[in-house]
Image 1 (cartoon, rainbow, N blue to C red):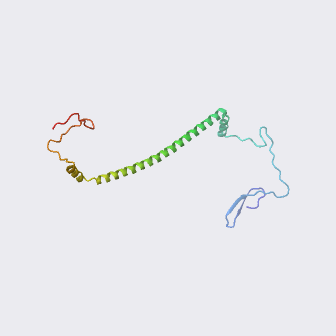
Image 2: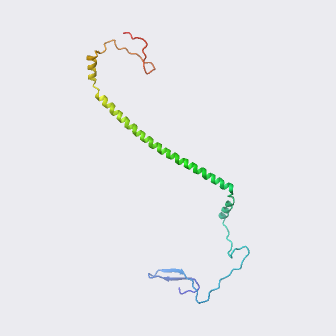
Image 3: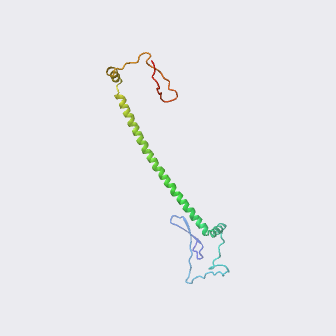
Length: 170
């Protein structure tokens, strides 16, 4: 399109031959142009028409009117209560984490003690020589194997042990 003095759209091409479009407004001459003056209408501020509010905007403004002192205090109290609950929750989470670490440490210590106990028991069991005990019992202490009729079986009833009240006769 050719040069345009009215501010309408003008198209040009760049070095690659691609078309570009842009608006160009300029004034030819030394006289300033006259502005269109709108007549003032009653109820319009600064010459601009008042915007019509959308339904949502009116609704929000109506809600804002209802935020009196009591409502603000209620919201502040709710915020404080929520903060206290959140802080207590975080403290409980921290306590649980510390407890779990302590339990883990104690379980590890228990496992180490059980392993040490089992090793000591195995060492003691392997150091006991039953043949040596039998030799000492027979030769040094004069013990003998029981003979026929010397073994008496006693029922234990419901308890864990048997209490002997009188001598057992052979």
